[in-house]
Length: 497
Ligand SMILES: [Zn+2]
Figure 1 (cartoon, rainbow, N blue to C red):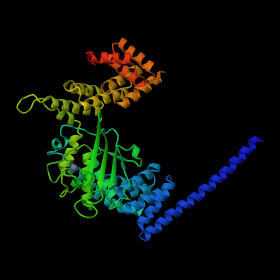
Figure 2: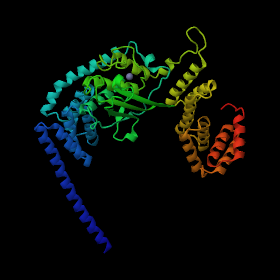
Figure 3: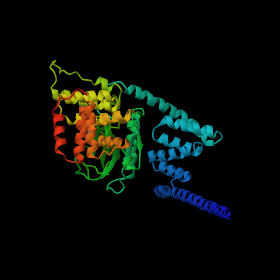
Figure 4: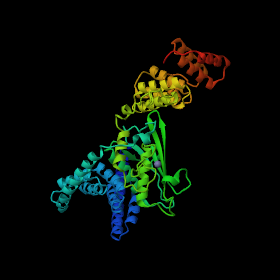
C-alpha cells in the first residue's frame, strides 16, 4: 500500500512540475516579445530595465539573457553586453546568434582579433546564412586593424618610461596570478551620475588590460565582500584631494604587495558647475585605476594619463603603456636593486637602506619568495628593530610561508610562532596558530596549556617560541611568575633565527 501511494505522489508532482515549467516558458517569451516591441518603438532603455528585472527573478534563462545582451549592445553599454553574452555562450557554445552578437560587441569594444574569431565561427556554423557573406567582407577589414594594433604595440614598446617618478622607493604591485576582482557600486542615486559613466569606467579598465597584453586582468563581481578593488561614485566636491583630479585612489599594502584598492570618482566637474564631460571622466577613470595598479605618483609629462593635471590627454600615452609594463615586468625587481652608496660613493644613510630592504622584502613576499622576503625584512630590522612595516612584513611572510608551503603541523606551528614573535598584533597568525593547536586536540585558550607549550619550546631551545607561548598564556590569565619568566627571556640575547 505504502509503495503505491508514493508512486501516485511522484506522478502528481511530475505533472505539476511540467505544468509550472510551461507557464514559466510562456512568461519568458512574453518578456522577450515585450522587450522587442519596446525596442521597435525606440524605448531601448525601458526594454533593458524590463529584461534586467526578468533576469533578476529568473537568472538561468538564456533567451532573456540573450535579449538583454542585445539591448545593452544597442545602448552602447558594450562591456556589460559582453558579460551577458559570455554567460549565454558558456551555457551553449553552439548558439550561432550569440556567437554573431559577441562578434559585434567585440568589434564595438575595439577588440578586432576577438571579433574576427567570432565572425569566422559564425560563418562556419551558418555557411548558407546571407549574413555570413556580409561579415566575410568585414573580417578582412578587421584583420588589417588587428595587425595595425599589434604593430603599434611593438612601436610603442621602445622608449622611455616614468617608473622612477611614480614608483618612488616602494615598488609595489598586485599579485597577478588571478584577475583582480572589482566591485563597482551602483551610482544611479548620486546626483550628476549618468549610466554611460559606467561604460567609460569599464572601458578604462579594459584599456589597462590591453596595455599590458592581458597581463593585468579584472573580474567584476556584484559582491563587495569578494572584491579586492572597489569603485564608488560621489558628488562630494569636498572629499579629500578631490578638486585636483576628480577622483581618489587609495591602496593598501601587505607583504604580498598591493592587497586592496578603493577608488572614489566624482560625478560632478570640480571646475565647472555641472556633470563631468565624457572625455574628462574617461581620463579620470584611467588615471585613478593607474594609481590603484601601483603607479603611485605622477608623470612629469603633460600628455601622459598619469600627469597630475588631466586636460590634454587622449587616453593612455605610449609612455603610460611602457611604464605599466615596466612596473609589472619580471625584471623590475632586479633592475631596481639600487646601489648602497650615493653618487659620490658615500654610504647611504641607514634609514634609506632600511626602507630599501622593506621594499625588496615586500616585493619578494608578493612573489611568494618567502626566504628572500624574510632575509630582507631581517636586514631592515637589524638596522631599525622598531621598523613597523618590516615587523608586519616578516610576520605576514612567516604566516604565508606556513600556509603556502605544505609542511607538517609542527613546522607550521613553529612558523606561526615566528610570525607572532615579530608582530604580536598579527591576529591572522594568532588565529592560525590557535586553530592548528586545536586541531591537535589542545585548548589554545587555556593558560595551563600555553605555559606547558612554552616549556616544551624551551626544552627544544626555541626561545622565540617560548616567548610567544608565555605571552599568549598571559592573555588568558595574569600571573606574576609567568610574566617574570617572559621578561627574563626577552632580556636574553637570542640566537639567530
Ligand atoms: Zn593622481
